[in-house]
Length: 111
Image (cartoon, rainbow, N blue to C red; front, side, top):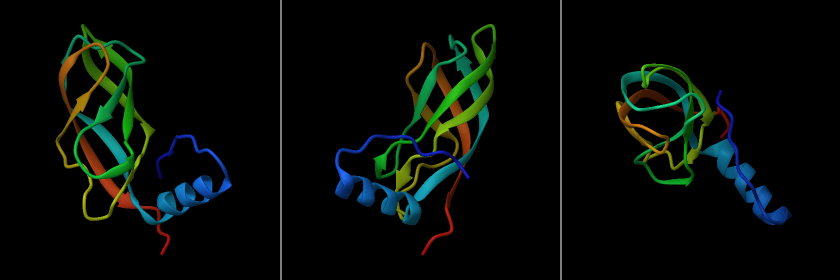
């Protein structure tokens, strides 16, 4: 299971956000597909694609000469079941470019 990070304002919004997180789909796992160039440890990268109320992100944990060789989930995001990001997924953000990630989408088991 991945973490879902975010903020809510008010108890009704929080309740709706929790419901969406429980019933929606998230990115559960991530692995480096192509390490790109120019990245630094600590970069937060955002996955592209899908229909979300909270986008999935990963964090660079290690690099070799700017090429990502270590990654971990930072935020699993919340996606509609029918519109999740695809694998090999391009990412945005951070200090580099051209990285792609292999991802696994899934639900948190609530119905």
